[in-house]
Image (tube, rainbow, N blue to C red):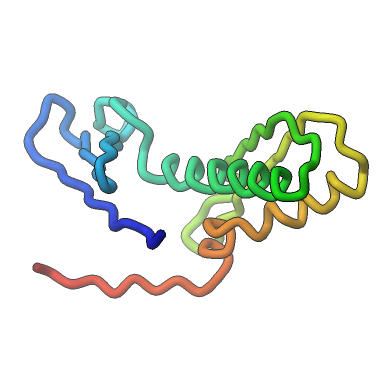
Length: 133
């Protein structure tokens, strides 16, 4: 299955920066926090980016463990900014694995976390050609 495009739509709403996000048949909201003039009706765009990495990591680990038939009972992934500036951004990702995994399995899952598609996008070369329609 190929990736679907994402559309963001903003207009005049009760929250000045509330933005409707549409991917396929899925709808969500992005917004800015109140202290930045938003209505906090949804996560901020940079928080959605953190969520994307966390979700991709968890899904990738679950899929890998299922293929290997390993006793992974659950995964929690926390992603936050460790450093944030115009010159450099560092995301700190902490992975909590649940289940009776041995040390080799845990080490391999840590390697696999770095292979999730969103991680590869964020650590690779990204270009964003932009055009007006």
